[in-house]
Length: 338
Image (cartoon, rainbow, N blue to C red; front, side, top):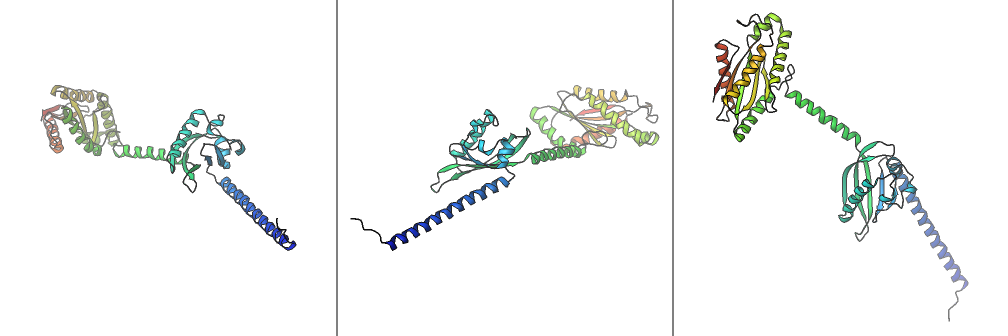
């Protein structure tokens, strides 16, 4: 037989239940308040944020994700997968993002990657995706939270900086007057070409070309015209250099250097003789240039058949041959095997 509660006991129990109900209401209100706070905080963030469950179903996102990325209300996103939104997520992209999610689900932790995204305004932007798995107390994966960072401007600035660095590098290796490679680049490439010649058993040729009586030309015609002569000679020589591994340098003043490969001595000298002739045929007046009365060049060519690593020895040999060309009348090529 069940004992009936006394009036006092019933009153006490009612008060206990009322107190418990009030506590539940308070906790529920706090939970609702916290949810509103978290959602408000998410929506205030300018970075797109989303949350997917273990099945890849969107459970939540912020305004930045719904408005900026997909351009549809959050209500149309929640409860949908990547493949349920074909109007805003093309199938190919859905497959790509789904594969990324699978990798993260199978390897819980974090995931970072960059991707180009066509935003709701029709503009493609580059985003950095930072994703992480959400796990319960038993380390079971519940879902994935993702935060997207717009790095478009950063990437554009990196590209501009890279282009500027390339321009600066080009300038650091280029003679500003003629646009040819300068002495600094010559010192770098000289060693490189020697190594390549040894490897492939080429003949390495190094020619030093000097404008005859150039000081007298400047004295008579002026430095402005002298600069134009150097430009025209540079252009004439370049027209003869048809291979990508022919390198022409302005070594300083009126002196040019040429590094090139050949298979025999005759070819080595023929190219330089053609260059000498081309310069003479420019028919640039130079009344103080001996019996020629026009601008000419003298050339010394070191033809290195037995390749050596001593760049100084090769340079001095070509310089010595240039001296011989000058001493024996100018407007000529003197070459010798090493």
